[in-house]
Length: 304
Ligand code: HMG
Ligand code: MG
Image 1: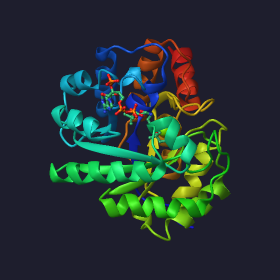
Image 2: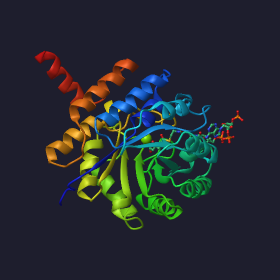
Image 3: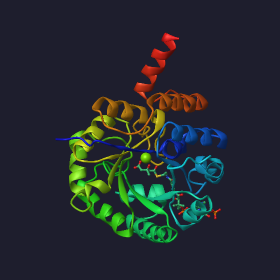
């Protein structure tokens, strides 16, 4: 099977990554992270969320982040928005685009957004209509698409109507979230096949957490199926506050290194990206979750 010539990286570290940190990260650090990612060549950066601060305190300062970033031409600074209140905040913060999120299981929908799947779709549709009227593009996520921490297995065929609903309400793309990082490549192929019965492949993105170490293999499987948009998080930051045990997203450095090896274009400077991951992990006082970054940092420090 042929691989795509170009892949778009949708960086989610400043949102999906930092939302799960126990220590509160100050605005200057968040802003520096976003600016460094843009400087490394990343063109789409989910830079925060406008959710309830009671639910996710780490994202409470997103207004200040969006208000302070020195925005680079050509870069999309997006935000996650759960409801109309979130959209209003996002519009005031002059975000470039917003994302809505629904879940593949009732239990996760309740834990993450305190509503049923049907209510989540209704809420997202209302939000999408209002966002489009404001001239904002809207992206849609489906969480726990490959397995749920509360309900277990998720049937691939359950995803197709959810993806269809997101596209029909006006989302330009659906990102399939393996929130707990349990999928394997065969599973990914089934999921993409099932969703592709309702949504064109060029409107499907993959959002893979790396809990079981399968994310790169899963991305390769997705690339073989024609997927060209990959969500990832610098230094493998993150997890999901409502998915116990879930570790971070696949590390952006690992994806970029693999794409380099495959000769697939992405427009990102790997050295600058590694420096960015090193910056944020040092600020957070945590290990770098990217094997590529750890190896290249060790190589540089032994050479100097
Ligand atoms: P609720 O408690 O049902 O809502 O939460 P509510 O309307 O009763 O509001 C509760 C309080 O929050 C009220 O304040 C509201 O004003 C306030 P109070 O009156 O008690 O002082 N509130 C807000 N404040 C600021 N901004 C808002 C907002 N909305 C309400 N937008 C709600 C419902 C959806 C708000 C809540 O469940 C929520 O915020 N959930 C988001 C949880 C979240 O961010 N999860 C992580 C992101 S999803 C994810 O990581 C998965 C993904 O990465 C894909 C994958 O990995 O699969 C996308
Ligand atoms: Mg996620």
